[in-house]
Image (tube, rainbow, N blue to C red; front, side):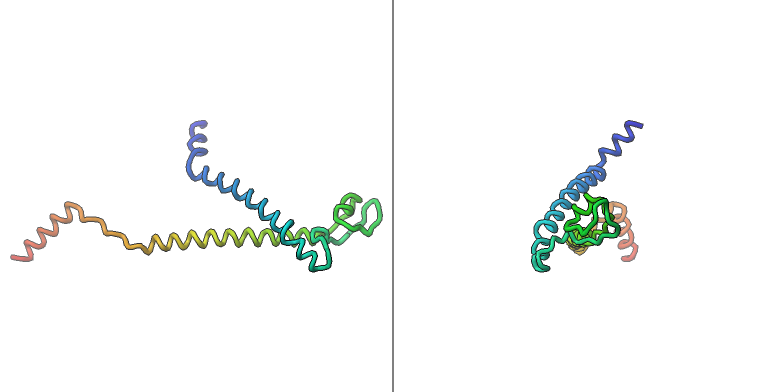
Length: 142
């Protein structure tokens, strides 16, 4: 059983998948930073200085009564919140990752089509086919 597991774990597909997962996690971190640190501050500035991640609706007040200025303050008070801004951030992150994946798949499909369109040289006929062709030609001459 250990031998079978070793063969499975060391197959190329498993290793490729592991590398893909690690790179995907790193890419997710980069996208999170892009959305949270680069894209949302200017959008918040255009919207009047709003921190987008702090857009929320209080559904039930916590131990200290509201209004709560930030999501962190609402969480600290134990309030039940509906975190609209964080959801919008997650949707934007997903859209960026999905678009990047789409571009990768599109490039891979283009390469595959180029390989398929390349003319292939037909294989040389086998010795048996050559002999049969010669016999056919000799019989046709008679």
